[in-house]
Length: 159
Image 1 (cartoon, rainbow, N blue to C red):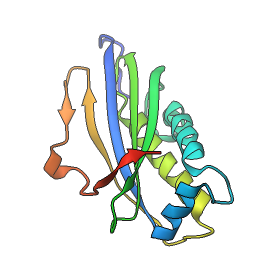
Image 2 (tube, rainbow, N blue to C red):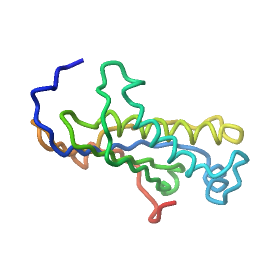
Image 3 (cartoon, rainbow, N blue to C red):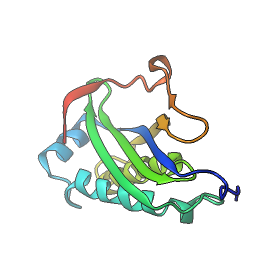
Image 4 (cartoon, rainbow, N blue to C red):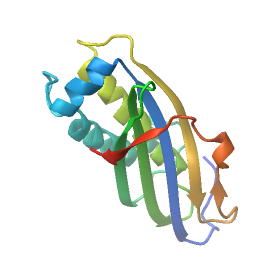
């Protein structure tokens, strides 16, 4: 693990996103609350938050961090890009960044969507997981340029 003991504490914030593509029928079932395992996006949100809190236990050499905030949000993709966009934001005040926590949150939330919906759609795909931005620390701010972000378009309105 990298020694960060000489680094000053600073506010750290990271945002990551990813896409779960699925059949239109599956999107409709999620929206209607008709997936037999329960409320898909509510469970996926909790899974993402729990995963962010445990990132250091999943990723070798990742520092354990006292997170001050984790949020996981969802939006439906505009047809014909049937699916759900997952976005996570993680924050802390500390010596190292929260990029891994945001990325792990997106990954776990996306996997939870897959798990809860696989009985009706085994052809779902999870893709385009990427860091969108990070703030804080010696390296400063990173913002992925719009041209390099996921090409998925969103329907207005979140669940």
